[in-house]
Amino acid sequence: MNQPPLKITFLGTGTSVGVPMIACPCAVCHSSDKKDKRLRSSILVESETTRLVVDTTPDFRYQMLRAQVTRLDAVLFTHPHKDHLAGMDDVRAYNFFSGKPMDVYANEMTQEVIIREFPYAFTDIRYPGIPEIRLNTIATETFSVGDIEVMPVQVWHLKMPVLGFRFGRFTYITDASRMDQPEKKKILGSEVLVLNALRKEKHISHFSLDEAIGFVRELQIPRAYFTHISHQLGKHADVQPELPAGMQLAYDGLVIIVDR
Image (tube, rainbow, N blue to C red; front, side, top):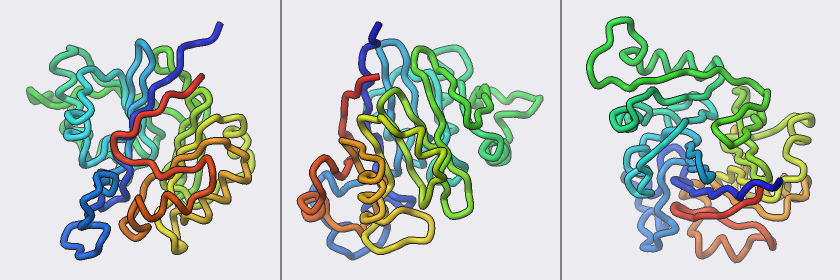
């Protein structure tokens, strides 16, 4: 029996400093186009019964308010860099209204940083109002959050292992510069791939736009959205017409529906 499709909301599509970047005089950072206003990268994944987010960025509080997310079942983390986990303290708002801990799914490396960065959430003496977190260790094996099946896909962010996630026929990958062949096979058959494309120039730890386009073509994914975008890539209105058919720049607030 086919399950209902998933709803994906792009909560943020910017790189670690966001767009506009503080103090930057460039035309992209001063653009009036809403599609050039990019919070740090994150998505909301929803089924009929389950809601989860991938990463709690420094913009997490505002992202939840902007998307009117009044209930959240879980958080999945890709890796422990600040632009992907700095907002975790604000999950405590969901604790207050749900009356239960937030399920957090992360690999051991990311959990070590979470515990170090938010030690007050894991001490024996519990201060009132701290975030209530239930850590769940993941690696590369498939697991489920409610009725959403999640397949981790490991990529490399220079030398750091980072997790992407496949949800049915939708795959989300950020902070990648390369991927081993066995992990590429996990993506085959995806209807939609979201992939980081930092800028046009080559970067040491992120795909450039051309590299991201080449990756999509290699795996023959019919629809692709690029995220984790820097102001260096250019204005949305200028770059989008240059992209091949089936490929788009994601933008904050974009919603897509994907079969499972």
